[in-house]
Length: 345
Image (cartoon, rainbow, N blue to C red; front, side, top):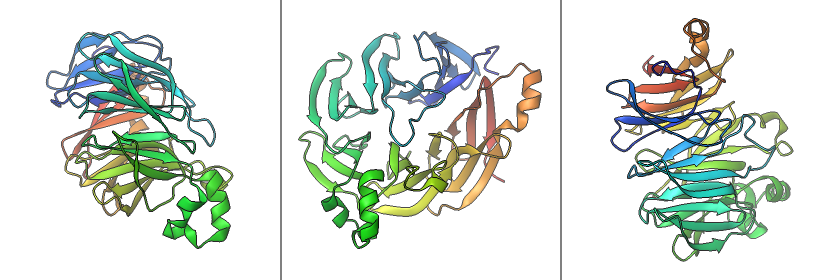
């Protein structure tokens, strides 16, 4: 347990020093700052709302925490769901920015901004003032964004046009695939973040994209997507993480599957391994692969401790979150339980 806390966790992230972890909870309970060395709560930050608890993302300088609204049924079928986002000052707990409905949001550490997709508009907010400093429109039902690690580009997922599909080798010569692709699949375009001018479109087509993020070493773009139920009914329960080389923008062969809706996933600091939450026979499972080959390396049944945990007054709502402790060990949050697991079989 986290000291004597009975609160069920909903998300976690490192501060830049990798010595303190922020842990959020359901039903508006506080965010804990958890000291890894002492295994104690060093501070509690109050939050309002968030019945299912917020997802957390801490800025690279550790000054701000991005709170993303979550739901127990977090996906609208076959489409991205607009949710609330807030930026909290990590020192004072003050809310600097609040956007009630948006598809996606992320920090740009280079410009000290929050970049957020509101409807079909990409909006920029300065920090710490919280003032809107610019915006530009996005067409074709954009749903997810990610800012490049150097802060110069923005990756945007959106519906394709016929002209877009003509440039994608895997689909341009398949006339039967073009019509459903226009309705049920997505592509990713890259834009200059200052001018809004499109630089290129990735040479691949994806299912509905719900999240994009960069690897620990910034060399890979991770893309989490799920098939539209009308396009691929048999696979609609599963989601996939695909990889793109963040320097050449070329899609890579390795991919990883999960049976959990919007699972937590991250690669190890050295880029050797990739871990993601999935569903085992009896409950959540942590699966670890070799990042570049996609070969399964190890797995851990998180719920294997449930019977023992209940006796110790440890509880869970079934969701699992984790962080890497170095390159070989995972820090797992399951309800109000903390588990440390060495990945080596």
